[in-house]
Image (cartoon, rainbow, N blue to C red):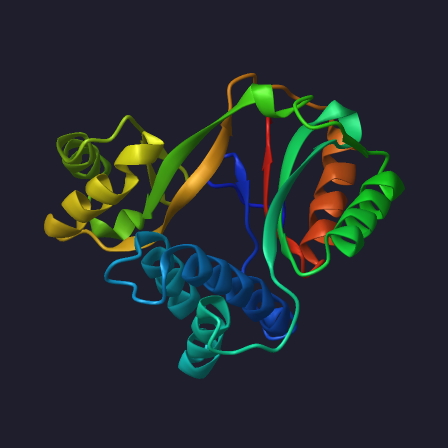
Length: 237
């Protein structure tokens, strides 16, 4: 689907263009702030912060923006309400099961905007636990296929401790959540350039929808992505 890519079929992400850049920097800044708040402002001792900074740099986020987000997280910079992470469970068009991860300084606003966006597309927010049992959290590491041929990448990933491997536009290496840091470091020691790494939700019960619903779902993803509070979207397609 145009404008709709997945972290190997489960993580919705959109490319950055000039019109979206401010929106993307807002989203990334919040993730940096949360990571610094939870684990401290030194990326050498805070793996989550290190990964988030790497993602921000890959998106060409200015260093000053990153530094401010870190200081906001450590409490050195006090210029707004506390940012919190929350995951909303929902059904989209065609009963697509969705996990919508948000980072927000106003949970009431985030919930209202997400609920309204879903409703316009024929979807709805559901109670906690109604969807999450269909997903499991794992580590996911994205490697450019330009790093080498698929067979070589697969061998190196298995050697590094991967649980599973998938190829789409990139190579996606899956790990146990607790093994993400170790596997990432092992891959880097093998000379592989990591494009992205983090914890993601993978559906354990796959579903399919009609072409009609695919088009509606695509529009819903684009609308949700416009919301500053929405960070990541996972589904069971």
